[in-house]
Length: 32
Image: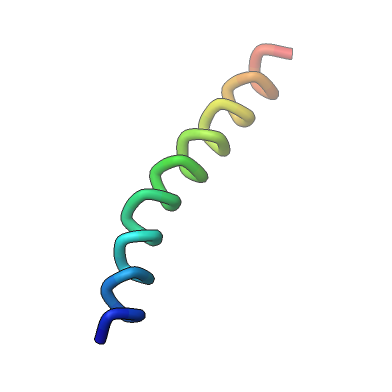
């Protein structure tokens, strides 16, 4: 139960960061 909660929390905080990084990379690629 605890591990599942920690995993969901990590997902909640890590996914947005990864998405933001991908979006920034794509935007930079389009500019160049």
